[in-house]
Image (cartoon, rainbow over all chains, first blue to last red; front, side, top):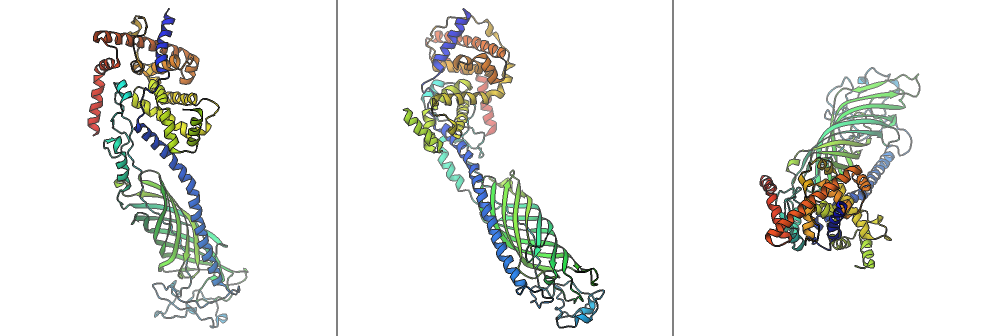
Length: 413
Length: 214
């Protein structure tokens, strides 16, 4: 008996509720919500699709510039293919000390024994000081030491803060009326970032307002570290260096970012002796020179944003680096252990070189949250002027990885 | 809508054509909402669940087997989404005490002119756990074993919840009866008026919250 009654009850509900014919009228705002969900679903796919392509283009650009430059640099170094013991280079970028001119090749170097220091061999040039030791002056400067400095950009996080018309869970009492009438529902949206009440009819105007948001300058600090490889003339003989530094970046225009900072760089490298320039006349030339340079790199770079969607940004940048030499030491390697000659030389003073290195880079930045972003930046540093005691053309390529801190994210809409 | 038209629409949806998606949404809005309303507590909740369902439909439309009825596929998705959406609340709802519903006398369940909205409102007033089981068993025709598996409860709990749901519904029907007799009509407006009175406290709560948020 009870069972029958239960079934009767079930049937009553089943008959009326199983497949109601359009009892619930269509609401445009429901479709609006779904459309937003679908749009948000589409965007990440777009990024995944475009990112490899854009990264590829950036990498190709870097490779091309690298190849073009290094190729030219190699030719310049030894056009005849023969090693040249001493070359009269132009003095390109003398250090602050002024310094001695290069010793002429015609001097009777063979007769002079290797001194404990280089004082005996030094032929002062324009420098008025009678140097007792060979100064590290970049004086007779010839070659540029490449230097590494990644650049981080801070870009605006463009949020699509379209107001979501989410549902408020208020009690709904009159289902029949709801089903029949199109309701003017005011949504107390959970995700309404403006905190404003929005009716469905306002949607279009909201979109318009959002797209016209004024540009707000953004500032960011970035701490970064980079392993890189250093080579003279080419990367055929290269050594791995390290860099660590702090950068500050500012968005000066919507897509343009200026970056500066300070990076401590350790640049070991090895080069054939013909690339090494010194006034000192070796009795027997070493076969190659191993160098250990430490410097402070101060870059000024400009970055242009080529891609910005969701939390992902991609930009390409260029600029110039200045640096302050902190330490230079050179070790001479000879072909035979029986050859006697100086084994090493440490440059005693430091020099400054302004805008001597060209930076080229591509930066990918992923915003982890409102404040913090992760940066990956492949870069190339190409020498423009002659830098360092040895006057080698040191070029560098590497990948900097950094964390950036958005300084004014609180003001980001 | 003919089969051919439907397949064209589905073809457009596979290409992620927004117009086709909207058309399909409109065509099956009433059907989908009908399911979600039964499982949800109110229309807005139902709309949110239904949109989750349509989102799944549009993002997995290529997995739809065209040889099978679309409505069945869509209905299954809507049911699953409804269950998923409320699964988290189900356990909590089980602990709710069953009240005097046990003592309700089984009146004759003749046709009492209760319309769709009356019955829907009653189902929506059921506690979550009872509502879900009642929907699955009485309206969608699943067995207790199947329900147990779907909701991750045992069949005994499913039976017990169904029993309690029926008791509550009977109580509501008899209340609707009394209310209807006293006012001489049986439509939903009357019923809902009494519902508002019962839930006046809730309304105040909502109002206060609004005040704080703004």
